[in-house]
Length: 52
Image (cartoon, rainbow, N blue to C red; front, side):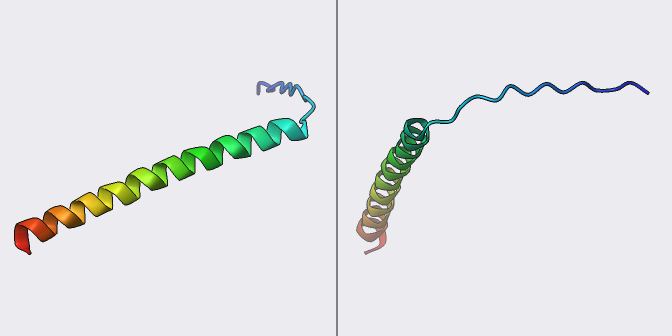
């Protein structure tokens, strides 16, 4: 049976990298939330105007 050789390169993780990654994730989440809220408002207004 063949043996699988695994090599893992460890790099130092700095707090600035972690903070930058979390900040980017938060910015993406806020942007997506704004678009989703806007889409729901537009959809509700359309429903109101059509069947209201």
